[in-house]
Length: 369
Image (cartoon, rainbow, N blue to C red):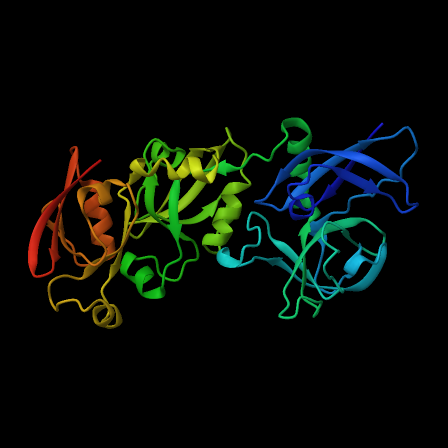
C-alpha cells in the first residue's frame, strides 16, 4: 500500500507537512522517508489502497547527446506541463562554489525547464525516467535552454539508502585536495596527468591508514581515471563505506597503487572538529614573480611560500603563518614542491622542524605530529 515519490531536497525543504497530488487531483498526506542536500534528493511516501501508476526507470548510463527527451513538471505553477528537447551534454559538473549539489553529475538539456519543474522527471521517448529535473543556469531565472537533471542511475542507490537507512551514506577518504596549476604539476614530476592533489591528510583516517600522504597526486579511483578535484569528490563520495578500493597515485614522480578501506563520511561540522588531526595543516606554493610581487617577498630567501594555514591544525598551533618562506624541512634544503613533500614524509620522530624566513628573520619552527 506504500507509494514512494522521488523529488529534490530543495522541494521538500524543511516542510512540517507534506502532501502529494496526483494527475487526477487526488491528494494524499505524505511522510518524509529521507533527504540529502549533497545530492539534492528526497524521498517521501504515502499510503493508499487504490492502484497508482508508477513510473518506469530507464538507464541513464546509455543516454547520448542528441537523444530526444521530455520534461514533466509544474513550471510557474502550471501543473502537468510537458516540454520537449534533446540531451545537450552529459557528465556536467557544477562549480564547487555554485551552491549546486556536487555529489552527482548532471544531464544537460535544452528542454524548457523553469521554476516548478524541480523534482519532476526527464523521460526518454519511451516514457522511462532517465533524470530528475533539478536546476537551471539562467541570468533571468527563466529557461534559456540550459537545464540540468540528476541521472536516475545516480539516484537509485540513494533511494535504497533512504528506504533502508533513512539517509544516504557517503564514502570518506580523509584528505584535503586541490587542483594544481601546470607549473606545480611540473614541479612535482606529474607531467600532464589529470587528477587531484593531496595537501593534507587526517591522521587515523582511511587514507592515513592505507599510506596516502601529503604530496600524493591521485589519478584513479577503483580503476576509473580522475579528471579533477570535483570529479574526485564525487567518485569518493559514491564509494560504499566498509569496502576496499584501489587508489592509483603519483609520488616522487612514480606511480603507486594502494588499497583503501573507505569509511562513512561524517557531517561537515564533525570534520571541522577534527582539525587537530589534519597533517600538516598547511599548503605551500612555488614562488613565482607574481606571488613575489603580490606578497612583497624578499628575493633569494627561498623557493617555497606558505599559501594557507588551516585553523587549529598542527601547523597553526606551531605558529606557521601564510607568507612564511620555507627554506628547510628537518635539516634538508627544499627548493621545489617535490623536495618539500619528500622531506616532510621522510621525517621521523614526534616533531618536524621547519626553517622559515619571516619579516627579515630566519626562524626554526617545530610542528608536532
